[in-house]
Image (tube, one colour):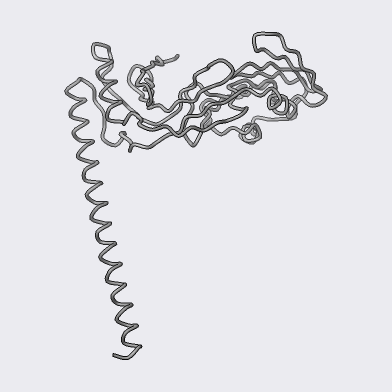
Length: 264
């Protein structure tokens, strides 16, 4: 057999192997999708027997989340506030972790996990809030908006932070004040091991709410729950389940359940 025929044979052999390999992958993927659908259908039936209605389509796939620790850094706070309050910026430590700041364009306060600023001279308008959020180093989604106030819900890794927000307030179409959650400072990312699956979280929550006036789980998403410890903030992986009586947060590490009532 000459070299040209050998090369042709080898190419055809490689193509055949690739086709077989891709076919096996497609079969495995199809079987995995079928298994996920069956698992979700069984979960829907199990929850119905516990008195809770949920649609299959709102049950997400499992994913692994990191845990974050944010340590306070007053130097970072100064840089953040200088952007809005200007320089020179004076600083007064009032005790109890409270710092007060005063600059050329206004004054503010910072604590672990929160901040507020009042601007006495500002050229920012309502349309600038998205740009300003990015300038702060934050990301999020606008949740409430009016001519006087715009609020963003903050996110990390594309997942919402429960209780994390930034609100911009306006007077006569000019930015007057900013307040919200301080997700700045030193950030340490920890990869955690075993985390609560969506199936376990939903079944656990259904058992937890039995006897209460809750009949439906409307949405299920991954998110982060913000906890305050001495000198740092912890962002813990969580399942966030919206119900007909507000949201429930199921800690993916400890299994602890927290309730955020409607309007709360």
